[in-house]
Image (cartoon, rainbow, N blue to C red; front, side):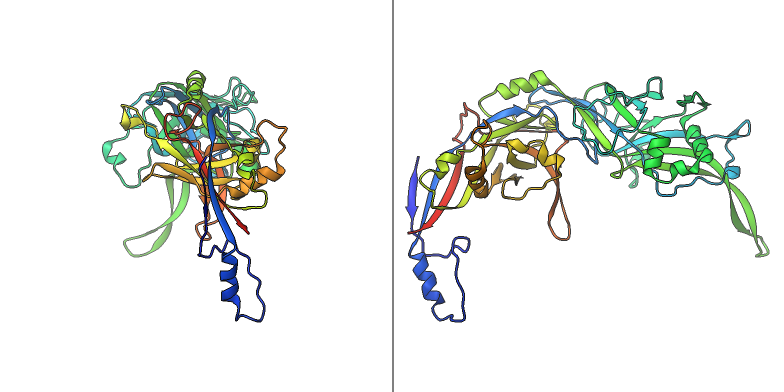
Length: 486
């Protein structure tokens, strides 16, 4: 291990503490005097890393993921289903019942009903033929529970037996929409699921379509629509969208919306040829939209190819970062080595640089993106950090972003973590000096620049890092700078 001692003649504000009083004439001399007694040393230490299977991650995201793909570099398959609830705005109302013109045997009906799954981004081939099933939930998923990416609403009894279910074949490049329509600036690509077949509710009542059920529920009791809670608990608990077939695309759903279409009469005014205005009754199309938004629960269920993940974890020539819910990198920090013989020193800086190994996929058009943001946290907090909605504090948890120029992630100063582990860690626990590197997404306040949210990255990424017990590249090191007064 290489070690060198450096004497410096420049001021490090982070090292020095200066006392101030009313006499300033000797400040310059005292600073120079202190610097003459300041000793700076540096050292480097080897860091051990390995890949670990993520198993599952906390899954409560704005984006829903739907589809099945294969990583061209590793051969790993990944599938995703998602569940969403729908939101009713405060004090929502349909038009007065007697104004509804869509009727069968004198009873109000909806002309049609649909769910649209809107996406702006996707991975894979937009022409791949995919199949999904949309299932009505039997009851709401409780808001106060934590849902992980392996949570299966179907197995857990949330999907209604004999309830509404629709199978849908689709491609993300929807050829049922004209090219001129798709090229319009306000067009947003979506998967449209029609809910127009006959529907039977839990009381055995039959309706010609799902929209008619919603309309009549409103006219029976408008209070059920006064907010999201009453709507979810009394009208529509939600839908579960499950990938049933196909391979080649994964849609990133940023908005789900339940639409009910109807015709109704409304008053307007017309102007006669003589310039006189008069009231006129019109019949027009109406739509009631119930979106899936951040205000309601949405979860994704991730299915990973466990056999392939196990093979990747067994590869000791590197380590992996794969999302969603794929592989993390575990790092063993040489805390005792770093602190040995430096009990009276200050750790001014401790830096770890993780180097990314470029993808070796021959099919680069569909190669997965590299993780853009990584979080370093103690292994003991691998679940609690996210469950407690923590953000990186740069004391025991740290954020690093991909530097595409150098192909690296740099954790610039984890000295506080080394000091914390040295003083507070329970050495009887096998993971006391282990940290985990996790792919995440972050939210920053645009005004203050303050980090406000850290969540698991649920998009598809794959990153190989220099490391592992059989690393063929330069050894992974942590660089440490110490200081002390003689």
